[in-house]
Image 1 (cartoon, helix red, strand yellow):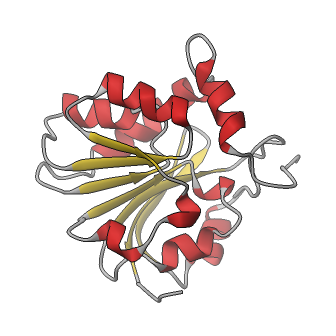
Image 2 (cartoon, rainbow, N blue to C red):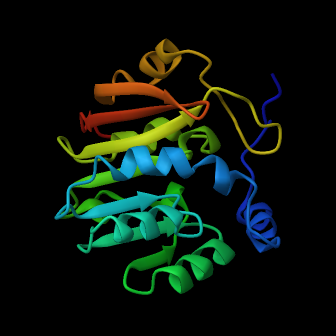
Length: 189
């Protein structure tokens, strides 16, 4: 199974999102987005870490979630597309290595959909989440030689990696990724 040797930068993602039709992965994440969206309550304040071109935001709106939503991504192209797709929500260019505790003030749900496998210090990101915040996310079972630093062939791989940071309420396989519904332990950095 091929994995990337280092994290891909924003330029790589800008190129992917600039392609006609967007990323090939966008179709792959549709069932994952649906799984996540079904677990967001109508009045939840959501922060989507690694929001891409706003596909989950658009689905949340279609399903009646009209409350606060903020999406962060380090790809300029993704953020521009997200703003165009969902101008009623807030999107910002932000490298997830620069996310701080204050970014979660008043947030009910943190979304980490297909993002942890791309971040070198994924555990740091989880450790700055406030204790008790609801975490909805997914990680792939497969490698990706251009951008995946890790993959999770089994459910226990997910549990073993994140057990000190998350209390899992639900884990299931959706479209070749492990989707999880968890509560952050807020262990700090």
